[in-house]
Length: 215
Image 1: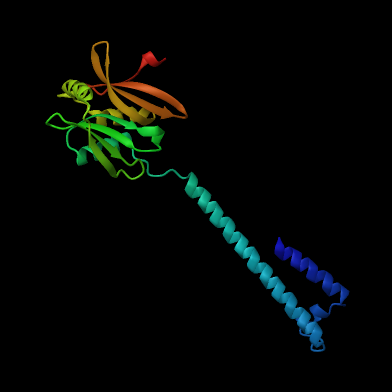
Image 2: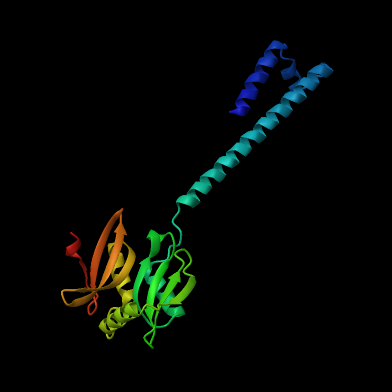
């Protein structure tokens, strides 16, 4: 746009001066010094306009690239990934995984070690890095964890496998255990196209069914 403006201005100047600038550009040796100076200034202005256009184009490309980077999905850590990372750091049995603050903070994975002690392991949702592990000193919570641990011992489907099974229904945001009508199953929450879903995953077969209690 700037370059077109300069060219239009130069064209008008050339017409009012009887074409002397054009004559000099064509090699007219009779052009006067002021005419030569005017032509040189005109060329310099046109070069600057070209440079400005190129700079504007480069800025536009950078802005577009920045928008693409912002919109592009990052390498988000799945529930299954978070559970695997937590168990690698704190070996034991994973009883739950919860994406805190809808993904804005961290995954929190509850792991019960072989001695019965429970730990909350926090996993970064963007890198899978372990942010920390804290022992759960709540006696009541420990009793619940032990009861859940008893339920999942010997089960064919663990927390990670339950998360993988339910991932076909959407993005898994939470995995836990639920004692429904005397039967224990994995309870998995998902999000897909802005809609939340809740699913039951059988401990023995890994079969995924919709939690009808949420309908």
